[in-house]
Length: 314
Image 1 (tube, rainbow, N blue to C red):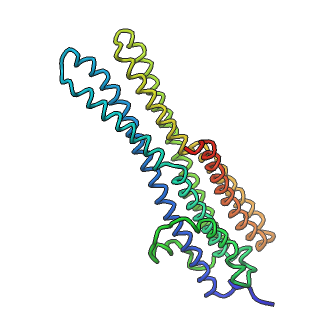
Image 2 (cartoon, rainbow, N blue to C red; image 1 turned 135 degrees about the vertical axis):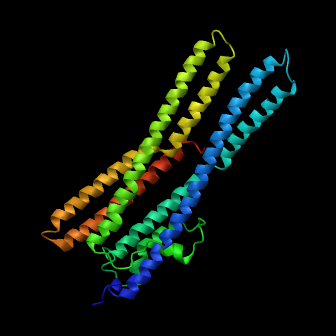
Image 3 (cartoon, helix red, strand yellow; image 1 turned 120 degrees about the vertical axis):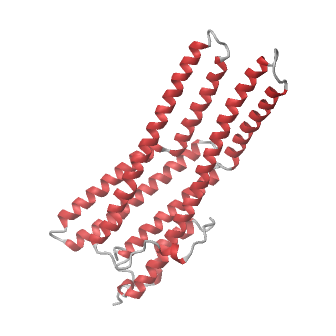
């Protein structure tokens, strides 16, 4: 009977380095794609606000220049406003097309897929504890590779590809520290809190804008020019709301909180169960945690796909 291929230390190191390098490659690629999308969202938001403000200002200055003032200023501001709004629309269609966001999502999904397999290999957990051929060893990761074989990725250095890689086979205790605790305290909880803050700040900002709109509405009875700025407030509110919707803060908060709680529960169950059957408890913990993290990633992708389909190809 053949021995498991990862029973050999050299084979274990080679397999882990290969998968870890792919994880790091796609993690860096996903960050680059995501940074590009985030940067363009900020640019589009700035152009939208600039266009709305300058457009309203040009209309009001046009009334003033009928009596005095430079005749060219309102028309110039109108041109700048139109250009800003036109650029915002163009960049929304080109830079923030579904394809651009899909690339970021696919790269992140690939990174998380490779990372999950890498930790299973690092802990020599099922199915890698019984694989006896290279085909069995790389069957699961080959499916991840095929899913992004037509997507360009970043070129990384050897140092970048090996950053953070486990140097020894992980015991269950080491796995909990390096993977479970790190995911809970280093990712899910901090991200959920950060998104809660962003969501709250956005709500306060829109509440402030609403208050200003009410005051402008009341003041427009005496100063008709105020009415034009109410439309600007509406544009700002819609732009901020659209940004929050695109970022899916509420969905991510709930998802991250639920995943962190499930990982904590699996850890607690493991601590109790390993007192009677440590080997079975260790394997159940590792497989269960990776399935939980993979489910979170799959759910995120499903939400993203639903959003894109519902946008009608925005």
